[in-house]
Length: 196
Figure 1 (cartoon, rainbow, N blue to C red):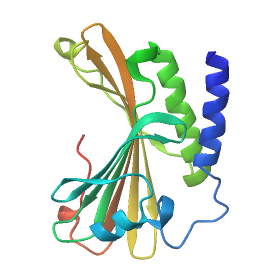
Figure 2: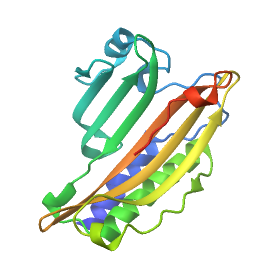
Figure 3: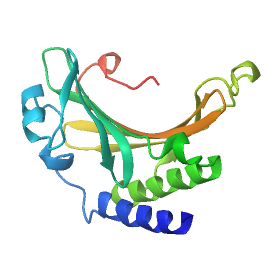
Figure 4: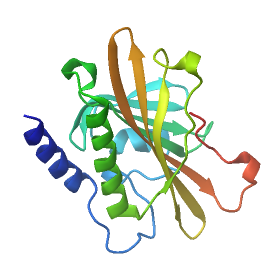
């Protein structure tokens, strides 16, 4: 059963992260969504059911992304401005199917391979072990990579990370992709960044 699941996942990732022959001049998400789009434009372009989660946040919940069921998309906007950050959370099967840490790690590597085919090699970020008192009862960041795509007037930072969660006797992981837009010419202190 695991072998079939792994084959299906590889095929899904292969189609989800199509290989790019040359870098595009404009960065686009699925359905033509771009950084700088208004909230109304994103709602119009998004084909999944989408709702307003907060004043500057739109959310898509419980959809299948790149073969991962029960996943989410979160679109964040500058106050009274355009789209500046997008989070993909691949929840996958979670604790319902008792997936092991090794299997979650394999899934991380599969996603990472897809990102490498599309955007090039990422930089692996060293993550120190959490303090002993936090182990087995909190969220731990297990793996993390970062990439920066450079365009004429802006950059896109892509962060890929896997968190593990302990809840009672349950253990599960989530895979996250965070895309952050930054204008090359604005004050670096004003850049939007992910601090998870």
